[in-house]
Length: 256
Image (cartoon, rainbow, N blue to C red; front, side):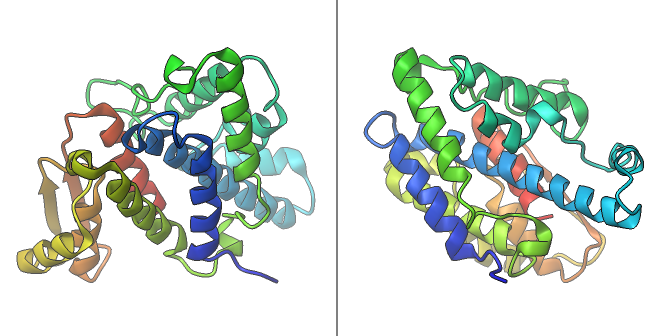
């Protein structure tokens, strides 16, 4: 059985970018593409856990669904990728994706919101006129969902080639978006070599609390955490740009 690797993720996601190239700036369309990757990932994780509970409870769907509601991260039905894919031809698909993101925020208070209670996805609008008129926007979003439905993009943990596949792929994609964005990349990305150097220089030990007051997409925080050498550490970040803050939060989730 084929296991999804970083190259599989990259190929599917980079192809999905063709939907937006020439329409909006890479510094903007990265938000739509990476957010859809996040939706696909949390949906596939939810699906994997549901399948495990169904096996545990010998097909008892009611018991499995009850157990799922006790999970640390909840994915409501209307927020799941498969539900959005089924509705890909709807005239209000942009609004449906926005509602899916709002559903994730409401189901996971504290995890997908700021200290003021504002949702992490508040600055990412899939119903925006930036995506073109209604007809063109709907076509682009439909194509985006079709691209992410590729069977090679199976992000269930049990189908991944390694624990770091999705997180590494996300970081790699951010670096490519940064390359396309040119000068604007400084708003959301610190080159990997710089992040690694700074992380090594800090020499953080187990139990460390690590803060980046201008965290961008969170790449430096991820590197700093990896340098600790254990799971006993805390990461803190601040970011003024709302959509970049969303990238950072998603980055933390995708790195587990």
